[in-house]
Length: 128
Image 1 (tube, one colour):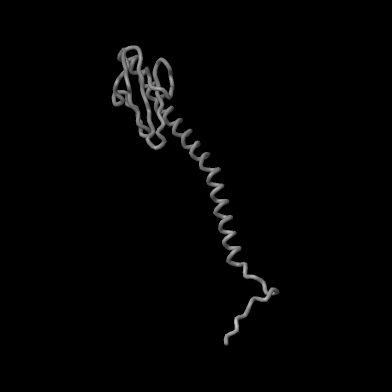
Image 2 (cartoon, helix red, strand yellow):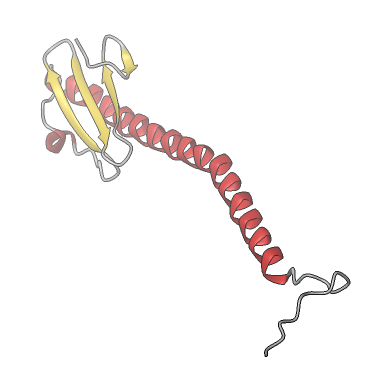
């Protein structure tokens, strides 16, 4: 006959594994909260940086267009003719004529678009 020993009430219950699980869950929760707080800040900083790049690129186009118009009597439809470097963003001249032009810039990563026209300056809305 085999005797089974029953735990004595005075013997401590092993708590090591349970404490480790609670500590791990607490750590994961704290990390998740930190990411939840920091991520919107990082995304907002990235969008702000991209918006500044778009603004700078379009300002270069506007400056080049002014010089082109002074020399040729009309705004240009060609970034190549204007010799505007646009390495950071996609920039295009939407329309150009003797009295006005519209240019747009787009960032594919953030899907941010900005326009510049002689009539409305900078806008998130397409030029009319």
